[in-house]
Length: 120
Image (cartoon, rainbow, N blue to C red; front, side, top):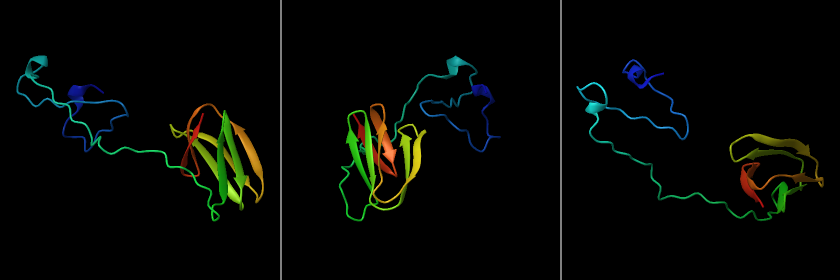
């Protein structure tokens, strides 16, 4: 879709991640109508971090990050789902109580059952 096709007839426009658009409200057609350009960012003062994963007696899954992978140990029956930081599914399996599995993963940040984990 060309930028000139964007109009009030659309109730919304989806902007893909890491993309941008601008709206030039001018009576002059073409680039001559654009005399200034303002860039506004979202609130960048808040940072997100990776919390330390502590062993909790009530936790159904023990996660240990090792060089080149993860060691998962089930304290109870648990469904394990691992996603990459780009939300791609990496691993899904049901573990029985006491079962342990070791996964080889490339270095990066993964989400294991909703917790961020770093593999180095």
